[in-house]
Length: 327
Image (cartoon, rainbow, N blue to C red; front, side, top):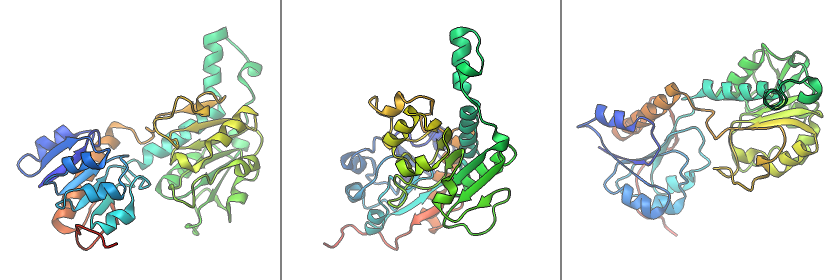
């Protein structure tokens, strides 16, 4: 079996190659253009990627031998699933590999913003000491209402971590109707945001959720509120977020994801006040990196052998591989 791996897609590729020597032949290389994909997948049964964008030309360029793409990660917004289906290529992804890590990162960002740790650090480093006037107002979490948008695996894990700290956790997810332990399920986005002291986003990026948090939504939140996003950058209108931080409507924001990654040097987020940034690494732990690599490869191998997967989910499962699509 031959598995093509986009450069940088698997953290423990060398270890996996040693472990599976004689069973699987791994080849690695760039996979950013159709030409690179064609070269990398020659003779391969599968392709493994992370945040690489796979559109219709990329699927058309894949060798006819490729039966499955392993997405080493959670989101599918970088992969054209209709194109995968049309070209007869299955897609498997890993929604459960870093639930705890991502939820913890979101709550850590929220707590750091709420306690104004960056400002406190700057005061000590710059002036040696300082009180509330230098650091800024800090609202009490015990009196606060925190909104969680999206209540899948990671959203629920975030709720579990928030409940011991905050006065109220309210949740909105149109796909969830059953009670969420410790949280109040609300009927719509407006009810979620009205007078919220903080918001944490945990939804996928789709045409329906792009810029789901824009000017109107930000201004519905309480003056001095906080926003944290560890899901997908396109969920928030970044220009409106920067404006709300600059004019003081928001007291802070924490982002691990951005509309364009890496974050451009010209982005207004880089100079927005009270902004906490991390480089799309909410998933990161040594255990999660190993799980992601091992589960992705195991599921690719399992799909090729049995058309079933054991760890992740199949986003696309075409019946046959086709070499051309009728016009």
